[in-house]
Length: 315
Image (tube, rainbow, N blue to C red):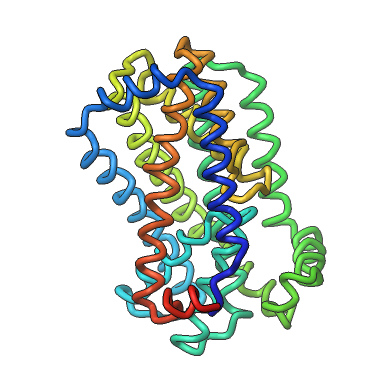
């Protein structure tokens, strides 16, 4: 597998954007905040991020098993974590690496695993929206946001369960240049999607996705606590973090770079946190969530045998 140069470009862009954030901030405030960070919270933050993978791994394993795709759990954990390395790609499209790993390691056709990945990410989206709604309702944030969230959910469920619409949707998707490489048979794709969206599986997967957002939001909350920011309670952080991540994801900018951080910063400042402090909080939340996960993902990718850093550097 070649080390995609686009990944390097993403990393360069990240460094550039974060450098801009530092440039427009008050460096003295940033320096003071970083130096005063309570390092004893770091293990707790990383523990919450790591624990947040558990419901996602269960969901991934369950979806494969439901479609009669049997992969040993230990191997499947590595496959799942490998996908985290490529969540920095536009729209997280790089997570399809999981399909390639399963084909290479277990000779499982991509026609069977790509639709599972598609539905897996759809459940993640639904879980994020539901977690946001819960936070919005409890905290009494702008009610129009609930209407927007419910409308989005209605559209998702319409395409998932109204057969004529879903068939047309998946037919269009599989005719795109990118997906056509992975899906040779639209009927197989549609069959897997049907099996993956029955009410029982959908309910379990959505609940697991919601649990993920609650756990990872706890990590974001303790980032604030580590910087001695106590003006926000956990549920408000949940609403802010999920909303910011969602906006970053739908922007289709790699990893939502700039969009997620910008939204996080804006929402934090609305809660009375200074711009410079909000910027550093946003960047640190992303480092401990997205970039920590990506780092672990690359390590897992190495252990799958599907990736060689030495070859990547030569190519």
